Length: 387
Image (cartoon, rainbow, N blue to C red; front, side, top):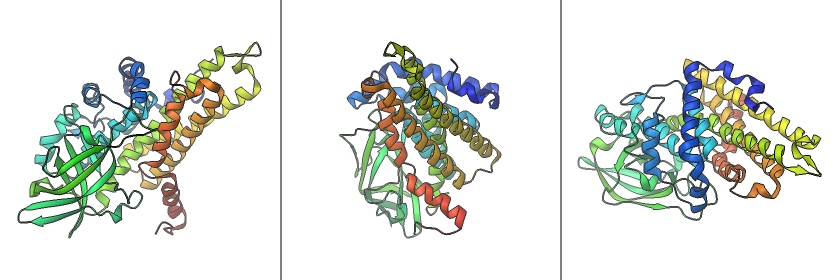
């Protein structure tokens, strides 16, 4: 027996440093996350602050950013970290993605020097947590329709509106909130505890249960002028952040798929059906071969996109290709693995059903499959079909 990734000689495409980062993150996940994650999922809880400090000491929070306590690692290294984090649980990778690729990236890319110095070193260390407030109850795929407003009053800004489906919301020390102004869409840093700013957790989730999901309510929130991100104007600001987070998902989804396949290979090897290992049957081997093939193709695509990102040539359309393909295939792999585990596949004794329901959320957030299909369609035809 060989590992699925060995079929594609994936390690030959990686540097020694990249392999070391991947292996280090895997070891920490094995030690700190896997023994407990099923319990967190079942309870619908996550020790986010404790985990943030662990992940900060590991160096993965904002690891692809330069300066301010960030590691400044390459895109493939960051992607491999996301792969190992999501192999443990999508909620863990979501915590890291929102912290580093959304909240920290927004401050790093668009913030003032004072804002960067105030927030980024502590966020990189996991001492402070951030969230990203773009999605609203009625505006997900169409963020341009947002109703949250920011109006000038003297030297201050006053924000009103509601954001929904916000990862890390109730455990965050700062929210990056995007609002409509007379000057277009602008970003604001809203510290936790600001008068008029309240956060309510979303309950009764079936997916991403080991993750904090919240509603942000802004009712006359008054902020000083220095709270605005000076470098972002218009929707290009938040969309640029989303492109960073989507890149991590290209790798992360393959981590969930890999974990499902490895668990299924182990199960089918020891599970006997009609006095033979389940893995010895032709129908089983066909399923395993098909899943290994799609996993390998997705991983090769992820590494290729990572190299393009490192070269500075990666386009949003290419990120859409990766997100659309890899999440879709990861979800199909998880579902097929569940069938091979039979009734055992619906229990939390194995990671497969947990990954499967988590991937239902990953399929939707950071751009639905439909939206990514239309982004690719526009690139191919020159015609925007979503307007």
